[in-house]
Image 1: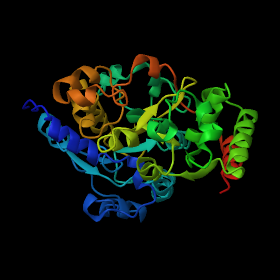
Image 2: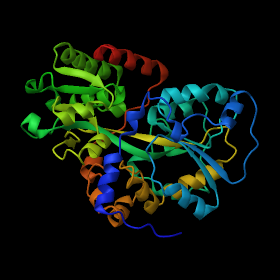
Image 3: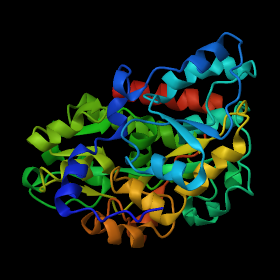
Length: 386
């Protein structure tokens, strides 16, 4: 396999400008050019007709703008396995609605890997919609970073491994705040009344507020959620919190319409190319970590091929190649050293190559059982006035 050329600084800046948060696509219609509609084999499966298996072919569903242009052809050349890579995960719930019934009936969904966010990955595993990842075909699983090796929804990572991770913390413009921010408490500073936004993503906003109250979202209780939601509601009703958004807060933050936001690191990394004044911090109390995870559906008959693809992506050099175009946090050890070789400017970004002191403050929201999940969501929806 040919060695990849280094990216120039001009190419890197262009990549970062194109690097929109994959969450920007939530709720959007399918992109015709991206193959975001389900394939014919999938539709046949939904009707109860099984497509004939294709030898040495792995079928992957992922989010848009979440891979570089080289990985798929390089994987095919290196392994002889054809990869059908489809960008058809626009929303966790939307994707679940498409595949729930066929998986429930034990029918093929024409996919061998699906990439879903932590809480939805947990739902798939709990429902029995996944199968264990073949260990023998995935020796590079040993490269998984230590803090993600054991999660509540999949102890020991038998059924899932992260594709990429991101952080939810505080985004701000020092020109608008007049000072540096360091704490979750800064979100509630009276000076910023009417210029604060929070995310509609319950686990990110609620988790961050809990951290500010000295509670650990990884082991929180309904009482913790109730207290945090009461605080959010109080500041919403007083007009302190301007609104609750998806990643559309980014435009207001860049334009100076708001001063502070509960923000995703990937958004600020992308915006910083055009607006270097913007900052993202993991508050001193901590920040939230989310991952999008690779899973093998239970009806896939190509688990070994799926694990071979995972293994390829878990080689540090290959993961670095992906990150160089999709600048999120790699879950693979050693990627920082590889990024220095091909994208040194990106390698120096703490939002991609996360420092150890920041990693130590990151928390993953606990796995919620159905009843608890419903109660947390009820509390949160009331708090944000939804």
